[in-house]
Length: 381
Image (cartoon, rainbow, N blue to C red; front, side, top):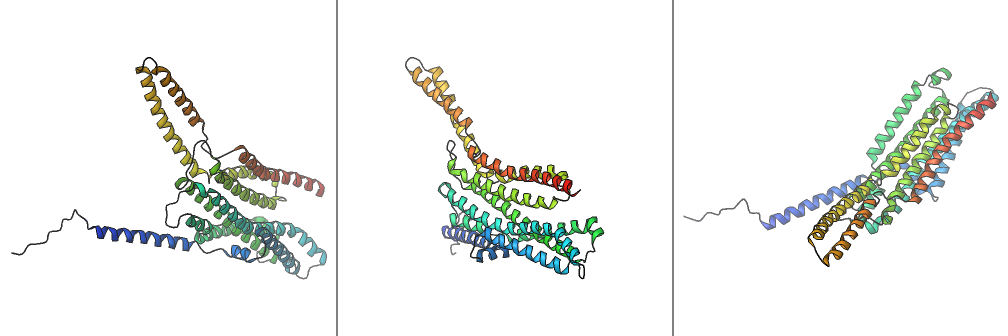
């Protein structure tokens, strides 16, 4: 009777295991490539700014100027067809300020996004010496992910803001009383409100995504020390950059309320300035803070264990060994105090001063609007 081949199911063929490992690695690399390819597209505003032979700030200024010129032209030509010149000039004065403010927002949002991307890349490259990335692409993958755009997330954020803006405008009783919905001036105001909301919300969504990425980098890839946090200071600088983008945008937006009761909403604007500033500052540092706190707990645990052994040795020792054990115990107690007092956030005095200056910009702009509104109200009355 011929011998039967019996296969032990508990044993795996080494060749099969290697093939399975290679396939798994290949599938992960392909998934990573698809993920990076999915965020490789750039919004039209960023592509347009990149194509200009000027800086993003200059490109934003050109966009603002173009919006203002277009708005003044359209309102002057179609605001009140057949009206007297004095009425057209009054209409331009009424809508000109709002057009200028929306022009600032429309120019600022894409320019801030482009300038912030450059600052983010600079911060990431400053962190390179302390990053330990084990993925196949390594540091280059992090750069590509930081430069990428999640278009689906941007579309959802922009569309949501546009729909909310349209709903607010159509439900505003003041719009219904003054002009018809199909009036050219109302249509222009609707257009610039929607475009500004679309661009600004997408910029803030992009900032939030970058801050989350920095938090993940700090948690997963950063090598930290306890007594010298200067190598991870770029996380704090990234937080200040995000706070500046958000607070400047909020300050520009609050200009729209200058003739609509800025004094009544000033406390809300000031609260939003502080809230946005704190979230923007601490979100990028959250991951590295967890890393530092974990290392601090680990170091304290080891030192406390050594202190316990030194105490036991001191009690059990006698004669000349007492002085040596006592010296070692005193050194361990000093080390424990040093570890306990070590900072868990990479914040230095210079960083806090800069953050205070950024927050002061938003608070002072709100206060200035209140004063200006009262001056204009007294003068016009």
